[in-house]
Image (cartoon, rainbow, N blue to C red; front, side):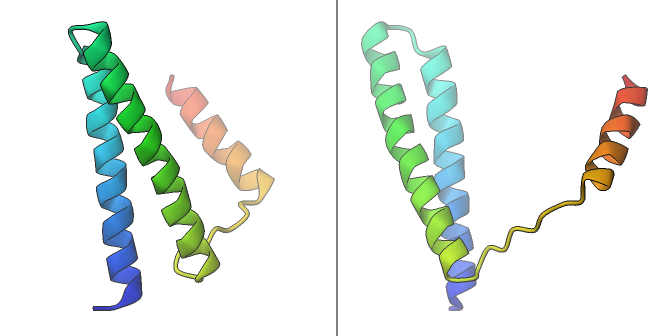
Length: 82
């Protein structure tokens, strides 16, 4: 399997785990359970960041700078909708 596919899958699974742990923390019924979810979330957020950095360093996840004019145009479009 191609490295990019594997890493994207791992990154997606990590993000999904963060989502589940986040919702568990805000919906937990006791402080002890909430603390457990928050500690797990913190670990997964750290690992998600590390996975992203590895992908970026390997050239598997490229970021691009968006021109300010494009940002302003999108902002104006959404501002008018509200």
